[in-house]
Length: 163
Ligand code: HEM
Image 1 (spheres, helix red, strand yellow):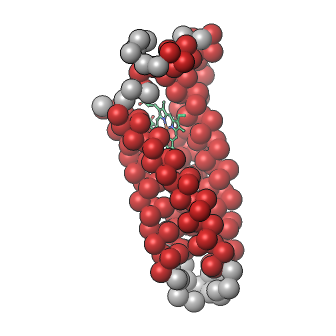
Image 2: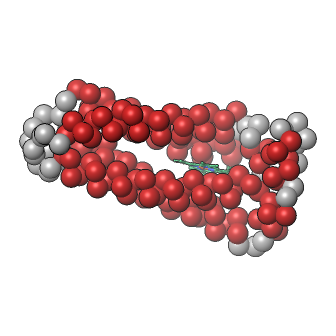
């Protein structure tokens, strides 16, 4: 317990739920494995989406590929967020004060906002395009920024353990 953390985080960590997650032999490991497996699914979907936005897999229908990959990414992200919340509850007061964790959360927020506003606009622009059409500069930019953002989140997530 880190008493320097905001009161609601100390309360969350010392709640019955927090204690249950820490004391159970399987809840934390299951949440951790689920987090990592869902990250793999998320990263796969993001890679397909962003590579297509950047002009890769040029023989495929861009709007269909990007929309399909996007749906898969959203589903995987929901699992990542839920499992992350379980991990967080077990050690909220420590993790919340970790600068790398704070950076990870800020980058996740940026990634979601970017996907919502910039990503939506990029996907709509693809509707008029067929296979082999060059990707608009805006779509390439959105794909590259999304890829960089989510790779950064994965790297920061792993780095928390060493910080
Ligand atoms: C796309 C979103 C996310 C990605 C890519 C991500 C990535 C990662 C990675 C790679 C790890 C290291 C896993 C390991 O080595 O066992 C991790 C751990 C963790 N994640 Fe996430 N994460 C995401 C979202 C979240 C969210 C939303 C939360 C909290 C609400 C969260 C909380 C945690 C916690 C508490 C740990 C354990 C940190 C430690 O003590 O080392 N994650 N995450």
